[in-house]
Image (cartoon, rainbow, N blue to C red; front, side, top):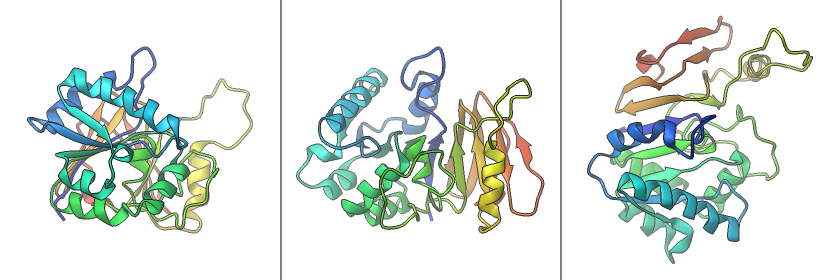
Length: 236
């Protein structure tokens, strides 16, 4: 498979505006491509899709790209096919995946990515690129036809990954505990992407980028830490 993916943990980093922390990564990733098909399905439908698209349009315009929401067209598959790149934004992963299935865009996106079309995901949009959405932090407020996602990569993500705070009085389960529960029934590796972390996938090469590290968790193994610049290609 030809893959050209930019999987970003979060769209907004504390102290900065929408996509500010990853704007340089996006511009380097997209290069001289001009048109971007935006999938706003991670937000509830109706007006929110328009509002979300406007936010994305404003930010991509600053970066020099022409973005349009796929819901604004009469043919969403054609919008994906004709654009130079695909961007799926964050929100609720269950709502997003339900929208992708209902719009019959799963195979369209897979096919376009397999041809080398760049795919950018933030948060839920990054979750959607993986094997399944079973390690998202989101509440299942919708029930998609399947938890299986786009399967552009053979692992799962946990965006916005949080380490345990030794000074916290919170007595609930940690993110790592929840992922260990997932691994009691599943063998799929999970990368905990901290705020500010980015995975850049080119064909069969994957490099961790951004400003923070990531934590790899696999069934029956101790978790392993990785830093920006590390090569995680072995997971592909």
